[in-house]
Image (cartoon, rainbow, N blue to C red; front, side, top):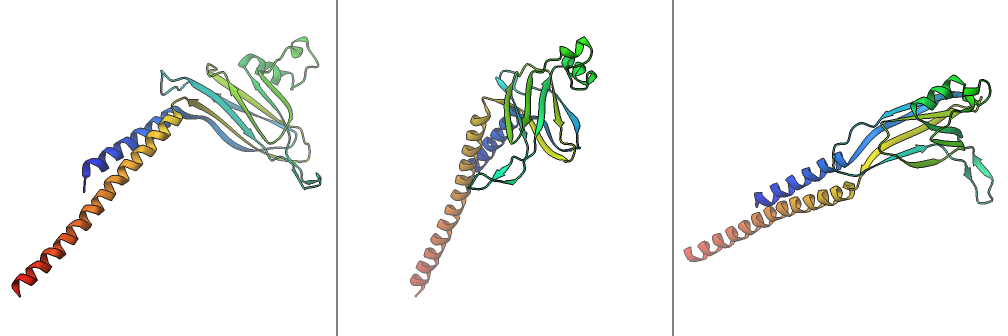
Length: 205
């Protein structure tokens, strides 16, 4: 066995795993049942940057059940639909205070979301400003008769994510090379031992 090869491979694999864990960070991951005709608000604090010299992107993915159609274009099953908003702190307060409406007092005409999507369904992906310290996401189920299942995921991704995967794979290859070397050496020793016994037996005769 070549312990050195196996150990080097193991250390490289650990390095790849550690680098990937630091280069791809989950800020928020939630799955919820949104009650009928209700809002739900998600808060994500973006304050952790494990690799200070890396360039991170802030990626949001929201997923809902989308409608399914047959070959003729007829609906097989209904999808889920929401109104989707991303706010800063100030506009979130206005939005809540005005009951999600622009009607009423003058200040209620001024709330302005960073992202606004009506009747959203399926998978929605958005790259946000990584300098945002806090992400406020509001999901509105307007359906008075249906509970909606919603999944949201916000991640910090750096340019080192792909590099970390490559390091991890290289480490695994080197590690298994070390194991393969051990098996090869063991088999070689067994063959030599058999030959040695066979030769001794012939000499004795």
